[in-house]
Image (cartoon, rainbow, N blue to C red; front, side):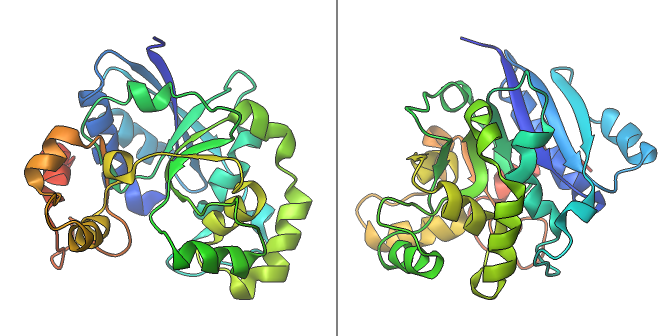
Length: 269
């Protein structure tokens, strides 16, 4: 099994602490792996990079890739979702040719178990390995909203293994920007909408309870499964990645849920 792993992240100055906490959890629970961490950014300076270098584990190697935000001129942008959300769409064009597979990780998550199985999972002809947080009506609604058929699945882009080798020739910047500019009024989560619209029929779905567990998911799951609820013990034993989706963050005073423990366990201050 390959112990060298490529990890992709995109951050800005405001998320450095959470990024370091995520990296700490990843490195601590995967000590037999060496990680090349490709950091897509537009505003980190040398002081930021130095500070980050003083906080990382020995099995972490950081590779910074600066992004030119002029590339995204005209693309929708709102306060909660800055241009950084587009970076993962165009990452296949920015990563070195030697990178054929990468695991993208948001910074608002914790990897509290080994990721070998996830990272080395076969693509089976797909471009992404990821979870979906929605089902039924919402899958249908997103298909109608963005004009695709029943073979498309709306994925959560916070955790995804990307088939970079096959994606590279398929990323057509002009076509993607045209779609964004024409459909901005109907788009909600812009990066997820784009990846769904262009590649949603080539996603290998995996279990969100294991690889992308949020407090929101736990709430809805427990409402439907009263005899086999997810509790803290189940999470500790079975889960690999917890993800603090939306505004419910464990570093905020109004956080509600059972997953804050994992953030605090690995928190870098």
